[in-house]
Every structure is written in C-alpha cells, then in structure tokens.
Length: 218
Image (tube, rainbow, N blue to C red; front, side):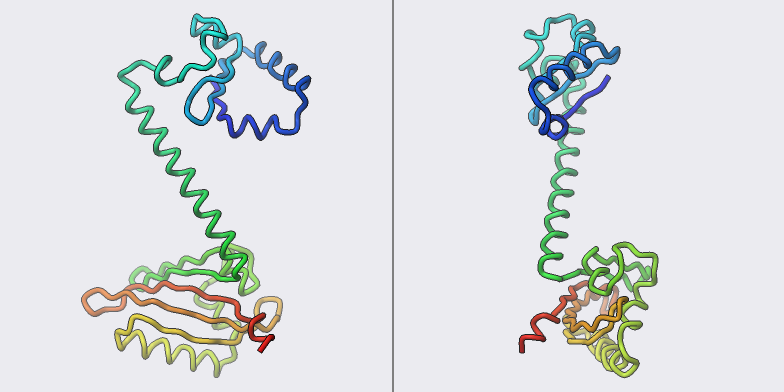
C-alpha cells in the first residue's frame, strides 16, 4: 500500500500536461498495489482501482473524505495522529534549519558549539566554507583555525581565549586574519560565549563572520 503526499505529487506533476496526467492516472489504476494520495490535511484526492476494491467503495465516495477519520479504526486514531504530529514537527525543523543555513550563507556567518567535557565540536556548513572546506569535511576542527593563522597571531588569539575562559567572563571577541584552504586571505570576527557549571568552563558556542568585504572598503 502506498501513500503519496500532495506536496510530492505536485512536484511530480508540476511540469506535466493534463493529457500526460490522465495517462499516469490510468497507469496507476492498473497497478496491483493500493495507491492513495492525500492532501496536506489528510483528505483523499486520488485512489486507484485496487484501493477502491479493498475499501469497497466507488472513487466518488472515497475522494474528498479524511483518511484517518473514515478509513482508520477509531482505536488507532490517536497513534496515527501522534505520528502525523511528529512528522509535521520534523518537517518544520528541517525547514527552519534550511532557513538558518540560507541566512548564514548570505551573511557569511557560521556558528559552532564546543563541549569541553566530551571534546565534541559542531560546526555549521557555512563555517566550514569560511575556511575553504566542504561541509562536514573529515578533518580535526580544532586544527583548522590554527592551520590558517601565523604562529604569532594564533598565540595572541589563544592566550586571549584562555585568559577570558579562566576569568569566568561570559564573552570573548577577537578579530583575526587567516589564510583559507585555497590560500585566500580573510578577516574574521569571532565571538565566543562561555558556559560554566560549578565555576568550571564546560562549553562554548558562538559565531564566526567573514569581514573581508567590509575590511576592503575601509
């Protein structure tokens, strides 16, 4: 049995003529599997012949009805609705994440999270790009920044970082110059936020922004 969401159906059919759609629908009618197409609120907008046989109804009796309310046993409604709610939530998270990725790419800003206890480091896709790497590149993130700076510049940056983290200040800002993987010179602004538990530095998060274009206009 196959369910097709209306969004996917629209994408499949968006470039098709009415004649082609009619042929496709006829093809689906000969498929031995049950095929049901639902709209965004769960109403049936297409069923093939096999579905009509199993549901013991005519197409005009099935199309337009809500699938859960009319064709799912009442004792399963709650679990189906819970699953639907989870899928909607997952879709919203994906949408928001894509929006954030797009915004970061436009502003040339990447964000990061570093866990001192576990050593885990998360970088957004744009942060990799700022240093000239493909997103999720298999490379030690702690070495990327160091590799792009001169020894003296990195020492100044690192010493400042350590002073702030040990002083229990919540914020550290720095402006640095690097060479990315393609040997392009870039000017970056870094903002670290520190998180402490029981007076111990356990995590940092923040952003890195490419200020090269701004620097060139000054």
